[in-house]
Image (cartoon, rainbow, N blue to C red):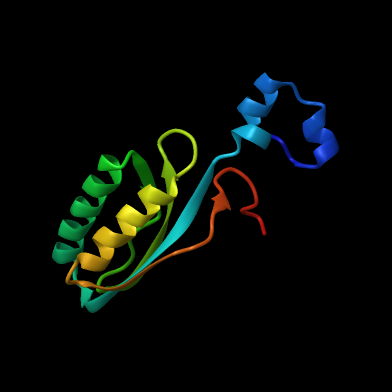
Length: 122
């Protein structure tokens, strides 16, 4: 794993190494998704919502991690990445539009773009 992402370190890497470490032109971006519900979702309803969410995420060639919690769930968050490469603005907008159209979703927010591989210690 590449511990430091300094320009001098990246400059010493060849294309294959940059791709392996997901840096420079091979950096992959995703975003954090925050979902608030009204009313709080019990287990059965949240499971149905989650199944639908996973279907939409897969339809847009995305992956989601971290969504869930202890019932009743008032809010949850997760990280969205593309199956390959970075998430596009169109994919992010489509997912947010779907969430905001759901009757049980009070609010859905997406963070700014984040590196999907590095910077999680901060």
